[in-house]
Length: 305
Ligand SMILES: [Zn+2]
Image 1 (tube, helix red, strand yellow):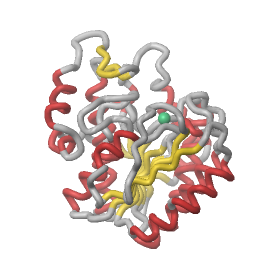
Image 2 (spheres, helix red, strand yellow; image 1 turned 135 degrees about the horizontal axis):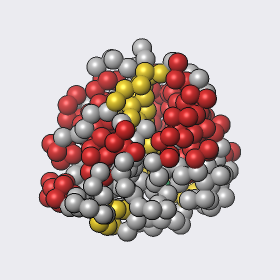
Image 3 (cartoon, protein in one colour; image 1 turned 180 degrees about the vertical axis):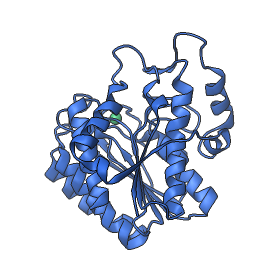
Image 4 (tube, rainbow, N blue to C red; image 1 turned 180 degrees about the horizontal axis):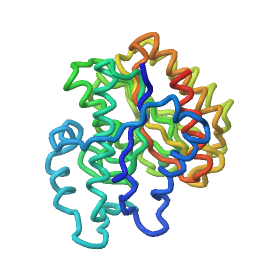
């Protein structure tokens, strides 16, 4: 079965703002490296479809979703939250970003693909049930998880988030939903500064600035992998944030491509064991273009090998 790479040209049109780190060039850098790595010969590239309002309501407050739809400016941009600007094309981009994730869930659940990567922007993991935040409007990975549970009756979905920032939105949405095992590693103390205490199915892994790959791997080996194994997920979702790369000055971790490959390959082993290798990954952070492209290629190889 194939590996599907899902994106959409509209995701490049979201107007995050001049000099904003979430630049359309991020998607170009990923595409360039996919070609340079010769992955384009072995992956199945598909165009995303848009998420519906009903799909967004699975993870978000209805009034909040309607507010985002009603806020699209006729010209210029408006700020829904600090650093979180909505332009004329942003809503459509966000709908394709969430829709890519819904489409990916359909493909893996219907055995039309084993794994999928969604190269999309805006990202999603800071978006809470009823609040835009940190470049994010709709929580793409949360929509994927909620859709998988609603549409396919899944009772155990694991979400792994290795962005340098805490996935506060995903924690907020699933804090009281034991069907979701949420594992988030992140620099601490750091934005968004609101890590909760977690619970038995919300596994926060705060790590200090300057964390290297060996420390990252040891912490994940000890604190996450046995628990994901015991959880026996029916689907593994990934919030793939590459701002934890050492070249990325959005954070202060010292991870490199081989660390992303290692974690992804470990998750692949668990996916093979528990869920017919079904994995859906979606782009979160990652702002230094060369490092982002190389890291995504390593991540995709980790899912394919
Ligand atoms: Zn981030």
